[in-house]
Structure formats: structure tokens, C-alpha cells
Length: 434
Length: 142
Image (cartoon, rainbow over all chains, first blue to last red; front, side, top):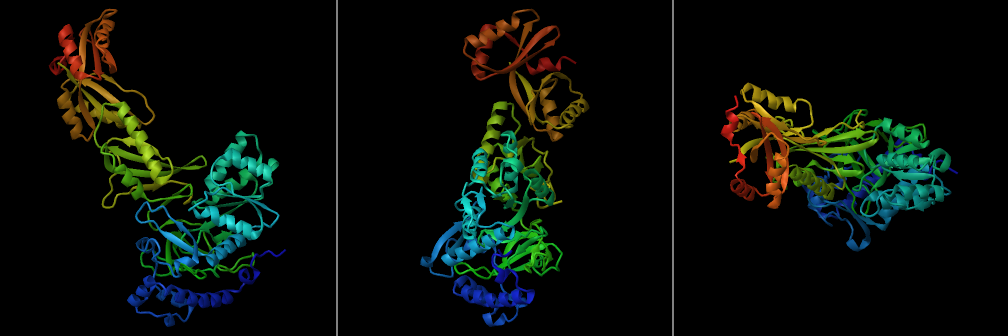
């Protein structure tokens, strides 16, 4: 069997990739202009599709931001009639309007193909058993991997999130050879395996882990590999592009291949929006090349990374990007959940007992990432019960909002650092950003 | 007929308690009794001192989060059984005690307590003729 799932695309030379990209970019622009949003943007910039003659001309195109997606909620960026769409994925919208990404059947097929290509790349074949521990539903890690693994032809176990004992039983009983999980959940699974006397090397058929959806360091990956005794490959996805599948590590484990037959990849300075040289960290900007329902031009992902190379020993000449190094906005990714500080602030400010100064600290404790929220009390009190009730209520309301239970610490007024100008609200001490 | 206790929110972090004590030292205020319970993240440092209202001002000036609260300070003879008698007076009236601590002052036992019903407690103290301290009694100790 071939090493490649789509040999005709995966093994293109750089020149062939770029020729294909230009052709697909021109098609994509025509598709975009079916929608008023992009027609207006083109008018404002005074450009027409004819201005895009070379691949470098992509820089003449307008950027698209998450705010644009919010402003056009729900269907304002659709480039096809709604009856041609077969699915949507929506973000929770806790920081404003939600965002909606629409898919035609062809969009879903292309998405599944990208995921299948990735899983094939790391050695999975139709006789493998794929278990997905992502949440299903609006979270694209569920259905995205599901359809991709089915496309490849594996037996799929849509275990969904949580219930570690059941996950382990499935792994053993069904002979799972690959599990997809957020890195912190792999660690959790391993802990439960240990408690249950299950040795992943001896008692399971695991051979590959697909990990993603939360930032993790090279050290963390290596720990996971040592624990489970198998290779763990980094996956990149975002719902705005489709979901998982956009980028994935090959067996060389030297950066993630971003599929350039599907996307134009740019790395720009988040301040000037000018391109940065290869090797320098900047913001990842993606243009979709195969989307029908919602093509996006120069989408600002807000993820920070850098180009590692454009060729690879694996034979794929698709651009290699470093693991994500952080964000150019203040979004935090914790255990696969995207959280903005403003969501936390919004909840804290609902409590009259609290002052307005607060600090969010992210730490790696043993193997798990945790969030601590310190907040100042508005008034001193003589009542322990009141403090305990308050603490509990803050925790509960935060959990409803961000889906994780942070550690809440009440502190006296005046104890948190007050910075000049814009207050520092988030301190990230996780091991990710070495 | 009550005294002012100071309640200070203290985080479990080295240096927070000493800051409070230094302010009191500088202001020449005497600590008569104090208590702090151990919880995981923070404690409430409860303090009986000479000149509580001046102490409160000085602490606030130093940026310490402090709240004065009125508590009853009952004086009893330093003999077995006196605390039981005093507390019984309240429990018979159906009053719950939120917290209590005690110390000796000039050879007398002092019970500091806070109840869930201050008004009723006040009435019981008057009716039963229990002797209670007021802030002036605290300033006289120096």
C-alpha cells in the first residue's frame, strides 16, 4: 500500500503546489464574490479578481477576522443558497455573537479527506481501530475525526468525551489501535489505567495517538509517548477552516504539514500584518482553497507559529509549521476549551462582594493544566460561611460559563498587582511555551 | 454594651500577618486577644485590642482590609462552671453562637462571642445582669 492517501496531491513539487494554489485561489475568489460581504470588501480596496495574477498577489486580498464572522451571524457569509448546505458548526458565542461555519456535502467530503490523509500519514490503515474521545456535537473534533476515520476505512469507536473506565474497556475489548484525545486527557487515561492495573504496552493494541486541540510542549508529547509506549502526533484544526485536518505531523515529527492544496498559509506580523521571514514567529493566516459554502480569505487565526520548512524527508512538500506558540489575542486554550478572560471577568463582576481586580494563572500541575482565578474581596468580612458560599458560587457560575472548574482564591483588596495602563489579567506558567 | 472586634482577611501567604502586626506595633496598640482558624486558602484574623477604632483607622491607612464588628465580651469569674452558666443563658433563649473565644483579663474570664440574634442577646444580657465590657474597658488596660 502507498505511503500516501492522496499521492497525487501529497507528493506535488513546490512549483506544482503553487500553480495549483493560484488556480484554486482564483476559483475561490469568484466563489467569495457571490457574497455581499466580500463584494463590499473588494470594492473598498478597489480590487477585482483580475488583480490576482500571481500567488504573491494574495497580499492584495482583504483579511477576514472572527469579528467578521460574528457580525454576519448566522448566515451572512454564505456563498451558496442555504438549501445547498448540509451542516453547520457553531461556536458558543460567549464573548459576543456566536460564529457559524456552513458546509455543503462537498465541503464535508473534503474535510473528511484531509483527516483521512493525516491518519494515513501516521501509519493507520483500514484494518486499524480508531477511538475518538472528543466531544461530539458542535465541537468539530468529534464529527471531524469520525468522518475522516470512516473515510480511511477504519473501524471507528465514537466513544466521545469522558468516562475513563469505559474508554479503557473499549480500548481493550475492541482492540483500539489509535485514540484521538487532547493531551491532558491522555494523561488522565494513563492515570486511570495505572489505578486499574492496565499496562498500555501489555494490555492494549495501541500504536498511535492523535493529540491536539490544546497547546502542549515537546516535553509533554514525549512524556505522553513514554507513558503509553506509542508515538503521539500533533493535530491542528480550527472550526473556521473546517475543524481537525488542517495540519498534522508526519512520522518525522518535525512540524505540522499544512495542506497547501487546501489552504494558502501566510505568517504575518500581528501588528503590521506584513509577512515575516521563514523561521520567525508570527500570526498564522489561512485562505481556504476548496470551500464552497463559506470560503474565507486571509483568515486571521490569532495563533502564533513559524515556518520550519517547505520540504520534508517524508516526501511531502507541503509547508511545515511549528507547534502553536501562543496567541496574538488574549484567548486561552485549556484542556481543549477556548476561553477569553472577558468571559471570566463578566461572571466575577456579577458578584457585588467582589472588587474589580482579578488575576488568572494557568499552571501545569503534575501532568494537568489548571486555572486559578484570584479575585479581590470588595469588603472585609467576619463571616467564614459567607466566604465559603461565595467561593462555591463563583466556582459554579464560572463552570457554567467556561465549562471547566477553576481554582478560586479570594484575596484581600489591594493584594493583586495593579499594573500601569492595561492590567495584566492572565499569567501563563504552563510548560507549553518553553 | 458591646466591644469592637477587628476582622481582617488574611491570605495563607507568608508576610500577610506580619504586615498587620507591624501596623499595630507602630501605632502603639496592644493586642489583648486574637484568633485565626486554619482554612486552605485564607483566614479571618479576629482581634481584640486597645483602642479598636483607632486601630481600625491605622490599618485602613496602611491598606489592610479590615472590618470592625460588634461582639459581646462577657466578664465571668475565673472559676469552673462560670462559662457554662453564661452560655446556658443564651442557649435557653434559643440563641445560637456563631463563634466564641475566651481569654483572661485582670484575673477575670472574658468570653467573646457573636450570635445569630444580636438584639435578643442584648436583651438577655440586660435581663440576666451579666457584666459585659465596652471599648473603654479595653483602653484602660495599658
